[in-house]
Image 1 (cartoon, rainbow, N blue to C red):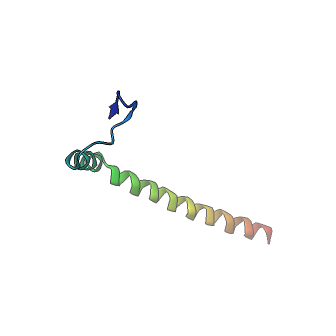
Image 2: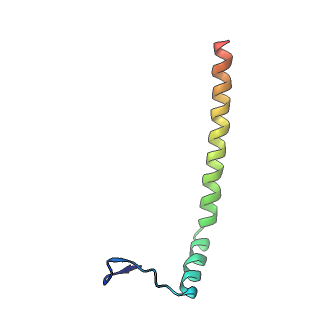
Amino acid sequence: MWNEELKTYRVDMDRTERKQCKSKWFEDGGRDRISKSVDKGLKWQENAAEILTAVAALKN
């Protein structure tokens, strides 16, 4: 949240406010977004490996 006096974001949130933000993040699917991006990264690595083996086979 923006703090106008300090011209910065609030860092003075108490523990319960931080927990609420964190739980809201999880409710909004934060964990799902991370796992989806990890899955995409793994899929990309698999595709890259297939492409490299195909290129190596073509060279031989």
